Length: 195
Ligand code: ADP
Ligand code: 5GP
Image (cartoon, rainbow, N blue to C red):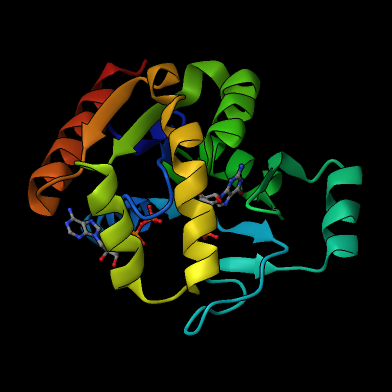
């Protein structure tokens, strides 16, 4: 393995339509390699049952969020499903310098902004569901959103999917352990590719 101190941390962006499996895969990545850092986003959406402030997200009011953006503290931000989401800049820059890899679970708008800001350090992966019907099933099986919220997310899924070609890699998340094995392969190769 490349010694950590000899390379900058890379920025691994995972995007997908809601329900395709990004959160599951990013949790598996962190368990597999605890030296990686998950970029905890700020959001104006309300916490789901079981979500804790500072762990899944920093839950903020709209005013607080706008202040963070105005102060330049967001590496990227976007409106998704009627709420604001953004990635705090400071921890990402510190991790890069320390040689720590950062995982982002962000949408295509955020992905584009991070690529523009940090081009050479970004590896982007788009996760596709095996079918639209399976995406709907997964959103329901997660059992954390109302029917109305699920319908809204399904309606937006084609829009998110239409951006797949902007990513470095595309994974169809059919069998979870196979998808995770492919993710590990990508990360291992990208770590070796870097100067
Ligand atoms: P996202 O973060 O993309 O919105 P999640 O990771 O929350 O999606 O996954 C949505 C649901 O689908 C969860 O209940 C998760 O356990 C399940 N899931 C994820 N990947 C798979 C898979 N390959 N096969 C079956 N179910 C999956
Ligand atoms: P959820 O509400 O299901 O946690 O996330 C909804 C969507 O917002 C997902 O597509 C997720 O990737 C995206 N998202 C989460 N955090 C951020 C962020 O910091 N920036 C951007 N641009 N999108 C985010």
